[in-house]
Length: 226
Image 1 (cartoon, rainbow, N blue to C red):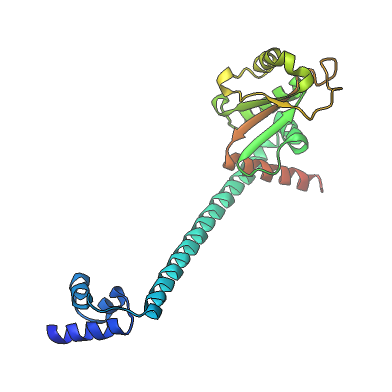
Image 2: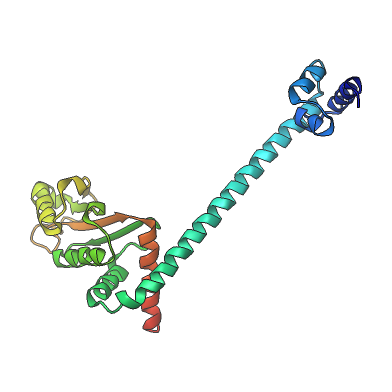
């Protein structure tokens, strides 16, 4: 096809409402050349709308495909984490401190958030047991964070309570979040009750660890016939 015929063919295709890329696919010419050949051709409103709709559709398809790819990759990672948990179970389940920590988490641990291992309790002995559980499963102290919840009745002791939980956990002040004062709490939760030091929540932000703990809890329940 001569250059003249290529130009005529390109202009005809453009008049039919094809995009520049679609025209280039059908003739032997560079996009920049085709653009110069058809620059003066005005598309109808319907033709322009078709091209806009096609671009939107292509973009949507691209986003959907990307989301599907990410979901598949995430599912593969999660499956790998669960397989690792299953292979580690045989050894870990023989450790009574691990089983104690797992049982405590089954009772008071966060079950909802996929990326957060959260455990809350007002008893310092229980909190220490949970920290020991985290150490057994490989969590280093620098990755552990703490948040304290108190009632308004304890607000006058906020600094003393923070010191108490820092001493209990052995964590530096930098790993403590701002203390949360629950102003909806009942006035009965005063300094003479078991809540005198509020509630301590231990947090580890780790999706892999959360998936493993969930799998270990499932395995423990299966072994008990639950």
